Image 1 (spheres, one colour):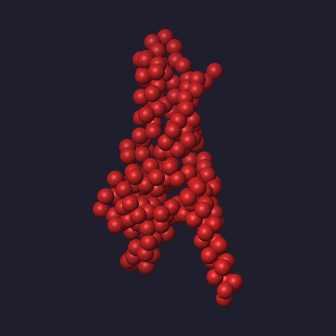
Image 2: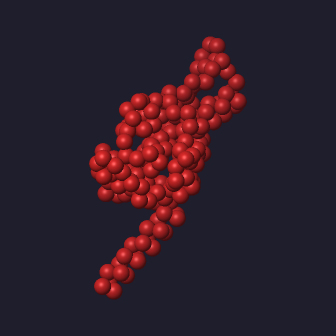
Length: 194
């Protein structure tokens, strides 16, 4: 019994150290900004300011996140904690917008239960897919604004996210110049594509 309690304590300490230092590709700063968005989207949730993110290395391949704090009883549900599990291997390749949408989606379950709406929004099973979701698009807006200020032109247009990279082009009247914005959390660096 003593051996078992030492093992449990060691695993708990290791888990806390991993979370405090960032874990398996999920930086605390990235999650903090996403949790702030989730709190603003679900202001009435009893989990506002209390959500804990945990890595789930054994999560099935078709899951990217899961609200662990929900006990689905079939015809009813009960909130048992404010924990969200994320699959680190998916998180490492997801765009900042997709990361945000996953956290907001799972926080929505903590606020409203296990159901999905299938309305094309963030509570769809695929987190709204490629659909524009304004609360999570702030990094895209900052990239477009930076390109617009640094390269005054006719128009700045960005394509779909490619993982953590946002391809954009600055259009002048007679030509266009391509750029790539590489993101890390809420920070980004813009480079010209040659």
